Image: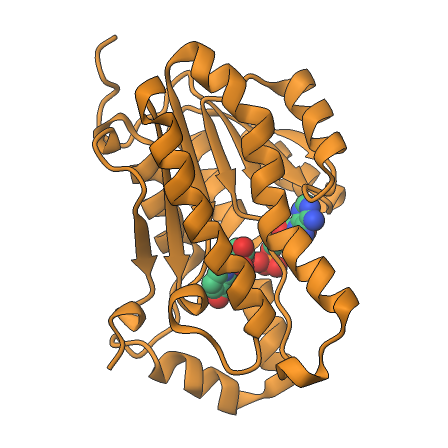
Amino acid sequence: MAPLPFGRLDGRRAFVSGGARGIGAAIVRSFAGAGARVVIADLDVAAASELARETGADVAGLDVSDATAVQAVMAQDGPFDIVVNNAGIDQHAFFTDTTAEDWARLIAVNLTSVLACTHAALPAMQAARFGRIINVTSEAARLGSKGGAVYSAAKGGVISFTRSIARENARFGITANAIAPGPIRTPMLEQAVAKGGDKILQAMTGATLLGRLGEPEEVAAAALFLASDQAAYITGETLGVSGGMGIGG
Ligand code: NAD
């Protein structure tokens, strides 16, 4: 099969978790605009439905940390050529102030969901001898974070998992990569700023080399590239989209 032109995903079927808003919504818009048929998998069915009307995507209302629900949606709406594991939740608290319930929820939504969606999608990808897995992690996974230890741990697990999936599935023509955003202007970040104030915002932008927040569309551009035929020789990588935050300094 001839490769699709740069930036095109015509005919590809994509599953985007957490696609109703923020980074996920930008990925849905970008993939739909590139010709993919997209399923928005999100808890927030109202927001997902509004975006579906705008983009022509389909909606699956589910908790992606629920492996049984994920399996059912993949069986009904799949098979998928592209899976973007983007859904996530954060928490702003020192580790000593967190509870076992917090750990369970953060790990379920940020890590177990990635396992569940990948597990359900891989058999069809292996049969098709083509697939793109794109996992949204965070620079907090690589750098650690003060006030987000469990989130960072879960996101670190996503990076390790991505590498293992890349190793196990290269022979099937499947690539697996991660994207590590820095501070991106989304409802998640706005909620953190509403709680922590301008000091948090200044700390976040100050940690980047470029001295500004990123936009969801800038993360979506990386996802579109990794999903494209032109990224066929890239696997097991974690791509920072973080204004240079990832190189430290
Ligand atoms: P957001 O909170 O703005 O949007 C997240 C979306 O995921 C929402 O639509 C929400 O309904 C959905 N979602 C949450 N839990 C779900 C579940 N269990 N099942 C299905 N859907 C669920 O978040 P965002 O800022 O767009 O973040 C997207 C991803 O990027 C997350 O994995 C996040 O950890 C990561 N990230 C974000 C930033 C940032 O600064 N915004 C930085 C680094 C990493």
